[in-house]
Image (cartoon, rainbow, N blue to C red; front, side):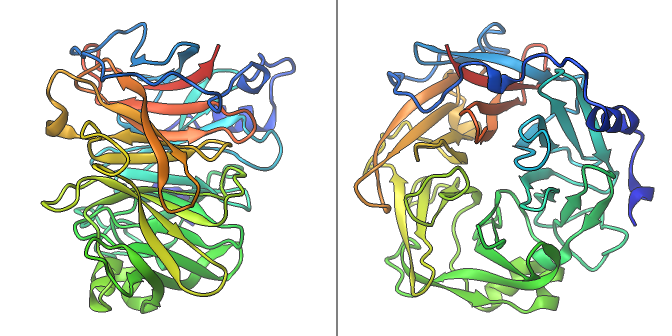
Amino acid sequence: MLLRHLGAVSLLLLAAACDNPPAAPVAPLSAQTLSAGAEFTPLTSSAQCTNGGNVAALLNLPDGYSESAIASEPDYLDVPDMQTLNETGPQAGRYLYRTHELGSNGGVSVTDLWTGETHVVVRRADWEGLDGIVWTPWGTVLFAEERGGNTIRDPDFPAATAGLVYELDPATLQVTPRPAIGSRSHEGMRFDPQGNLYGISETNPGALFKFVPDRRGDLSSGRLYDRSVVNDAGDGTGPAAWVALDRAASQINSDAEAARVGATGYFRPEDLELSTSTGNSRGHVLYVAVTGNSTTVRGRVLAIELPNNGTAFVSNYVKVGENVSNDFLMPDNVALDHTGRLFITEDPGSAGSTGQGDDIWVATPGADQQHAASVSRFASLTDCAAEPTGLYFDKSNGTLFVDIQHRGGDGQDKTLAIRRE
């Protein structure tokens, strides 16, 4: 329906790569000895960064780990953000898709991990701030705009006043808008085993959402819910329940609809992760990075227990002054490894312009699901201008992928694969 909106991109090359894989492809990353689940010696401090950083090593890493650049400008657009592999189906784990957070004319690119080739797959002039992306259980790619208010409306849904979610069929490259999921500033998205989609609104205050399709695998219609804390402890923690939102109003602006029903707000929630997404069996828990700092609560990571029945519970899984030092600034993206450890990137912006690079932290699970036992520094950027984003683990082998955006020096953004030597 919307192929008329696609830009001039390398579609034929990508389709050929998908339909006719090389007769003898180079060894995929899964054939190498990779693991981010092993123990490591934490870094004691952030990197002393420079403009452009150490080109040979964009990240300071623990002993025994190394990075390799698997994609870079100009093969894709600048400002690479979130990413996902094709997690199911034929050749699962071969294609790494990512969004590009451009102000307009945004797009989605893909890297073939077997051949090393990177292409832009889809691009449109009206796409603003593409950010969140996730592989669906039925084999498509879902991606979204991080816009609390669009300056360029979708021509097919001009009533939507904020960002929309789109579904990409990798086989046909057809893109379909999914306004039933809600119009708002989207970022992290994750599906649970029942096919429900969890998301956030990257605003202040920003609510947490769950979309329940009317039919599993069909995102064209369904009911949107927000998470409201019943007995708020003062910082958005405590027992909580899902509150149903009006379907029509959510398609226009789900932030306004959440505010109407009194949803619990947080200061810029951004990414989220589900304990079920990487095979971790520690129950059904939703982790949410809250980037903003307020006078009472610094950036933190929430843990929301999601029982099949009964009341859920929201707690501070990671919080400065409780289980992490003051060096922990404005957590942004999160990803679980197969052992249940939560990796967390920082996005301090001007708060981090002190000659020290942004960090990637690791929260180790504790005796209960509400609080991490410890939080330690795993990696640190050597580029003062850059930001790590798009953390994503390969389910099959523990490869950690991360995008490095806003780079100084040569200005070429990159996608890295972090491996254990």
